[in-house]
Structures are given as C-alpha cells and as structure tokens.
Length: 289
Image (cartoon, rainbow, N blue to C red; front, side, top):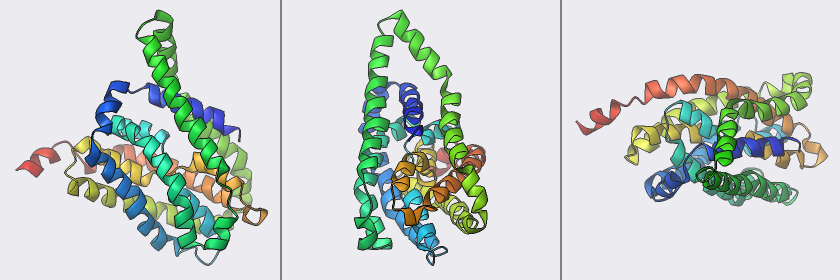
C-alpha cells in the first residue's frame, strides 16, 4: 500500500512533536488510559452495533462499516486533539495500546457481528505489518531523533524541519488515499450513500459519550477533549490495507472506508471548534463548586 510510507512519516512527525519525558508521565496516568480503552473497546462497539443495523441487510457495506468504526485512530487524531487544546501527550502514550488492542479485538467483534465464517477469510498479517511500520518504527525513530537533537546542532535542525512539515505530512496520506479511491466512490455513490448517515451519527453520538466518560472518570478538561476525539476518530488510513486484502466479493468495502475518511475530515473541521466550546476550561471550576 503506497500510503504506508507516507503515513509512517506523518506518525514520525506526530511522535516527534511531543517530548518523550511527558510520555513517561502519561503512561502513569492509568485513569486516562483505562478511560480511553473503555470508550474505544466497550462503548464504541455498542454504538457501532446499534448504528450498523442501518446497513446490516448488505454484508459488504456492513463489513466496511465495522472495519473502520471498530478501530480507533492512532495518527492524525493526535494532531486534531492538539489543535483543540486536548491532552495530545496522553493520547500519544495511548497510541501503541490502542493499536495493539484493536489488532486483538477486531477479529472478536467481527466474529460477534458478522460470523465465524467471515473471520476465517480475513488475513490479519497487514494489521501486524501496520503496527510495526506505523507505530513501533516511527516511535523509536522519533525518540532517537529527540536524543540526537538534544546533543547536536544538525539533529535539532532535522527536528525543526520535520515539525515544520507537520501539516503537509498530515494532508498527504489523506490526499493519496482519496485520490486512489475517489473514482470508485463516485461510481458507487448510490450504494455508499446509505453508509454516510452511519458515519455522521457515529461522530455525533461519540461526543456526548466521550464527554460523559471523561466526566465520570474525573479527568481534567484537556483529557476529556482527548477522550472525545479518540472515541470519534477512526483508523481509516491504517485499516485500509486490511480491507483491501479481503476476498474479491468485498471489493466495495474499501470505498466504504474512504467514504468514512471524507466524512470524518469534515467532522474534524467542525470538532476542532465545537469540542472546546462544549468542554471549556471553566468547567473545571464549575465541577469543583
């Protein structure tokens, strides 16, 4: 998949943007980590199951919807969370756990929602490859870059250039994926239109679900914003290689994933302004009063 190297660069730049000393602090925040895991792997599957009934009559649409909505984002969600004033350091620390958990739990949820016969036809090797190339390698490389940047002038220059290219790196994989599949989306638009309400409703429902989960966990406002973004943003770019590896009968499923990407981009533009308004910093004092 040609997007893998580009997406790896995006994640490298994303990991590079947060001091690794803060990652150590974030890993000790078990309240946040447990909340983000519960939201994504307990609450999200319930929401997805209910909303997926809209397309349950069409197995291909159903499979595409399940693949993309059951897998939490581990890449550009960190960027959008930071723009909205969320706790991107804590979400960054959670990224490897989110990726590992979705690798382990996706087959279970597919078995539960679709059936054992379908799960037997799924090749999970692309997911393992994605974890190594999109999480482990960029994370280790970013850590080494920060180490070199702290000790050498050329290392600091490299770090500055990469961080300065964050926005283009974020847009490039999105552009590549959309460009590669947009013609198919256009040809199958009539069928794919049924999936759009599912994606819109999912994003809308996950705002109050994430906000309430953060409140129940007594998290601070930046952490609550991060929970909302993590719950609402899906792993479309990373999951696409998996969907492309499905049997030929499911050739429409990748277009479902790309449709979700297009919907999500519009949603994120709204969310970076909406979420700070819904979860303002003054809510801390209100909660204490």
